[in-house]
Image (cartoon, rainbow, N blue to C red; front, side, top):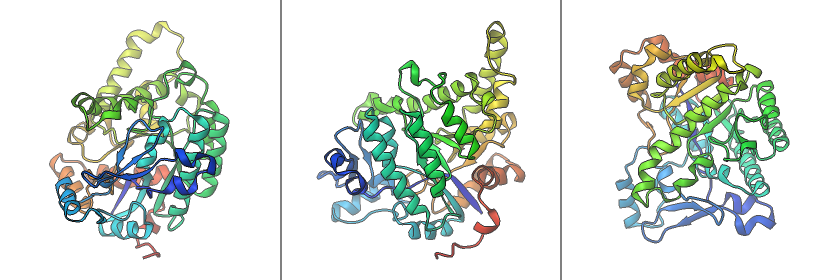
Length: 385
């Protein structure tokens, strides 16, 4: 029995065209089919990059298999339907021994890079409303994370409260904020957001490709340089944000706030913990800093990290423990372990001799405790099936 802490919806291509206010329809992001490879891409006039939606739903298939099907029939539906159909998703989950899914956007990750705060807010609300409808199919098993607009913190607080009332279980914020000092995670710009998220037990997530540092990825898959640096930039910004939240005293001021670092793996954690602690010991003693514990203690209490397959991170559990790590299936993306998640996870655990207690924490109880998932309820098939 597994719970995935980081899976995805794949939004309908016309979601924003249909749901945005009329004044924004001409700017609405939408799906467009490329006449050359017949893939569908999420794009729009204000977006820095286009997401390949076709290769965002090919769990259990290779890219070559996808292309072969489309070469024969450009109009064919290819891939899993569970990205947009909640019943199909529940069916695929049960077949994969995954009893609950924490849901992140796919196309929607791009929206957090918008500079136009008003337009971004309209796009985010349209997404959050759609996601709440999707999850209402089975709120015990479909755990939706709202997107949170953070240009205006009053608006962010109101959206957290609204989405929490709608039944969504957490929020998605910038993986890396804009460069301006006023939006740094060292600033007090976010204080009311941290407070309401802690009060409502509403974990705040940062996911790779959901921030301002990712704007440079516009040519991912097009140029060697951008494609090469993709693997470093999007994960490096996660490490920096974790460090800033710890060092700036966010978790000292808000001890009940929980933050999730999604899809950056866990291989870096042992190194980052050691580096943060040694820096504090060597240099911070001469500075007026807000921390009453070591950085590692805040890291392990307040920050949860997700992984799909991570041999190095699992090998380092003797340094880090397993209490703030969570396994992810990444369904229905191409990197997903579906439809063989149970066997894949067991094989990796066996290879590195992960003890049974840690296995249960990594794949079940950590995520259940974080999001309030009732394990006894979800161990049975969804009543919608």
